[in-house]
Length: 185
Length: 304
Image 1: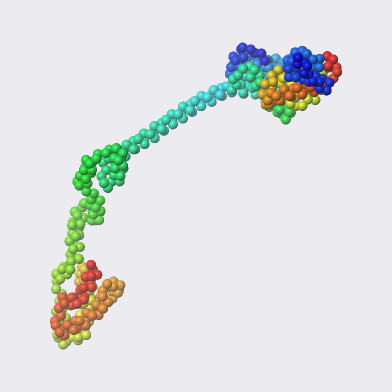
Image 2: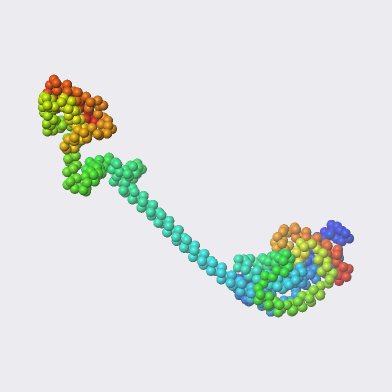
């Protein structure tokens, strides 16, 4: 996320409920959040992203920090949302109005997701699925969300060494299981 | 230089944190073994570049903005209410403290002021002395003299006067009550002094007994019975019925329960008539003499 020097003013406006501020924040960070959910195989990543921002609107009033801390907060919420999704796949916390709007947009969103899934070689996805859940969490947050080792450790709730160990073991396994066709790229 | 330390694991170079950071950051790794990972990371990162529908952005942004505005307003209201409650609580606390402090101060001051004029015997005289011991209201010898003067001028007999007034009957301070109180000592003295009894009017019984004893018309046993009855009546009138009025018939006196005359000497009534009979034969019957032999002594003792 690269809001830059205007981050503080945008954050203050978002706290008071300014729509323009929320639109700006959403455009900046919704892509990585949705990509994180896609990488983890969430069925409806766009809806999950909306849930993250709805939860963020409740926690933002008490937040006071830098843009990096804001990004950590957003993916902390996303990670908790992912855990809920994994435990209760059919749980839908959104309102009926949100469901109707999302149903209307479902076709367009699904087309975009299918397009992206189509570009990922099946060998890459298959190799990613062979990782342990902790390794997938770390690589998703580090690669897709763009978090640092420290941010990833804070989101997952572990220490830096554990994050480094998980990403090292995960990439080692990926390197061993990637098909030759992918390597040839 | 670091490359000299590379250890090959399962046909690949061991991954180091520095190489991993280069791969994840999108850089070009120095080892050809890391090329497949670079491709993998690029494909995985492309998931974050998926475009999001503008309509979905607007919807979620509006929803989040409304939620944030509602929460912001609620927090502002809670803060205002909290400040209002805090200020009200502070005011109540200060007011309560002031009232309690004022009450304690006024109570202590009032007690000390009231105890300052106490004299010995008052309930707060001990408090007066205690305060004087710590230097509060200490008048010294002058105060002691003033207390003695107060006790001399106003002796604490008001309560006794009040009890006398209430016991006199019609009302406190009434003339009847006062007269009764004044007469009471005289009445008590009259009924307790033995010299009052001889002042009674002389009874005709002795002369009657003397006449009956000297004449032959009446049997001696009958005279003895009459004398016994008169003696019993005399004992009874001196011992228990001071102001009974006319003497009761002898027969009624005999029927009184023995318990009422328990202080009487047991053989007193029985010894009366024989003595009379003995005296009748020797000397004329004297009323004072008959009482001096036993009858008057016992009732006087019981009445006292």
